[in-house]
Amino acid sequence: MVFLKNSLQQDKDPLEFWKENEAVYPLLSKFAKKFLGSPATSLASESMFSTARDIFSYRRMRIRARKAEMILFLNRTLPLINYRY
Image (tube, one colour):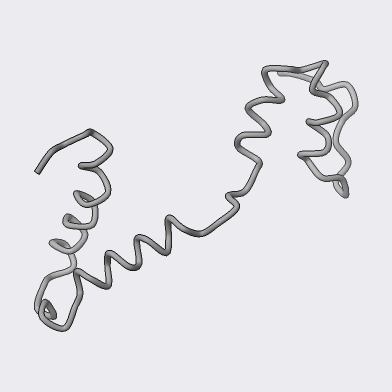
């Protein structure tokens, strides 16, 4: 178990703590900043809802939830693996 020198008080910002202790724990600080930071925008979720809206358009009202979920998954995943269609 790792014990940190200047332990974090409950009322202190965790990111501030890691900024102050960056020299002491450089690797741990890097990961803490990466995973404690919140995204600046909600673009990914807005994009997902937009795609879902296109799938559940008035013309495709009869599509089942499972198939719509598969379409959304493929829509997001195929570009990540550089699949050309």
